[in-house]
Image (tube, rainbow, N blue to C red):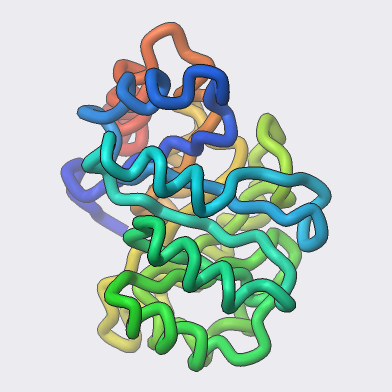
Amino acid sequence: MNLSAAKIKIAPSILAADEFRLGEEISRIENAADYLHIDIMDGHFVPNLSYSPETVRDIRPHSNLIFDVHLMVDDKILLSCIDSFAEAGADIITVHAEAADDLKRIAEKIHSLGIKAGVSIKPHTPVSEIEDYIKFFDLVLLMTVEPGFGGQKYMDDVNLKIRRVREIAESIGRDIDVEVDGGITAENVHIPVSAGANVIVSGSAVFHAENPAEAIEKMRKCGYGV
C-alpha cells in the first residue's frame, strides 16, 4: 500500500511512560505525536491493571493530542467503561472483539457519545472474527504482541492480518485507520506500514528514548524507508 508520509500517525503508549512524571512525559511528545495511546487494563481480561477514567480526566486539559483509549477489560464492565472514558475525554474508544457480545451495538453506542469507535483483536484471533463488523468501525487495532505488558517482541505472523484488514476496508470503501500495537521500533516500523498499517502504537521505543520527540520523528521517517 502506498501511503504518503504525512498520513502515518504515531501513538505513543503511556504504559511505558514514567507514571511519577506522567504530565512531563506527555509534554515531551505533545508536538511530535498524533495520538496518545492509553491502555486500560482491568486485571481480568489481561493479567495487569492500569489507569482509570480519573487519569484521563486529569490529563485531558493539558494535551491537545487525540486520546486513543484502548479498553482491555472484561465484558462485564465494558459498557460502563465506555461511558466513563467517553465522559473523561476520550476521542477514540477501542474495544476487544474477544470481550464484546455485540460489536455492532457497541460501535453504535460509542458513536452515539460523539467519538470514534475501534475494534481490536489479539494476535491469535483470526480476522474472520471481525470481518463482518469492520464496516461499523473507524479503526481496527491489531495487537502485534499479547496484550497486557510492554516490552515484548513484534509478532511477524500479524503482517498477513494487517494486509487482510486493509483489503477488507478498501473493498467496502472505508478509509479506516489500521493500527498496530506491540514491539514496534524505528528498526521494524516499515514492516507493518508496508503491510497497510497507518497508526503506529509505540511505548518503550518512544518514552525510553533520550529524546522522545526525536524518536517519534525517526519512527515516522523509517516507516517509509526515509
